[in-house]
Image (cartoon, rainbow, N blue to C red):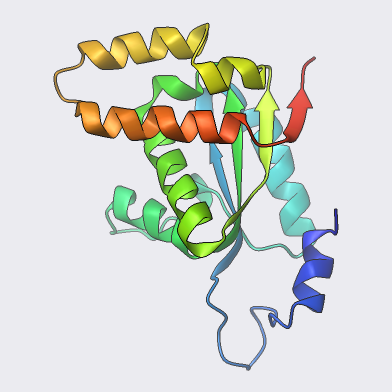
Length: 173
């Protein structure tokens, strides 16, 4: 795999500080993660490493414009990113927002060619793909929530199935 910084240089996408016309992408990478599971550990280290390499990385608590609606800004940031890195962890499916972002990522992958680089953090892709273990428990709770639209939940299931079939990096400590 070619590093992002090399791909940028070879793909005629100018760095953000260039005076050339702006590329379609505002961010090189969009990080999608469950905060309680990975924010203070893996995600922070990844974010710092990417930024040190000059890779413009969107992480929700770092790059959200103040005064904007969070949901709209996050979904917009996904569409404006060249790569998405979902960090799938045990409690990932417990939050509607992680799943909504993931559904948007999968949609952008299909429609716009967004490149998705998966990280399976203490989970097996088989569990993700088939919604087993913690994923099954999370969906059982979502089914009981009267505020969740079943059609939306179906998009989450499809998105998890799809990313569960993508080759990614596995982190088990």
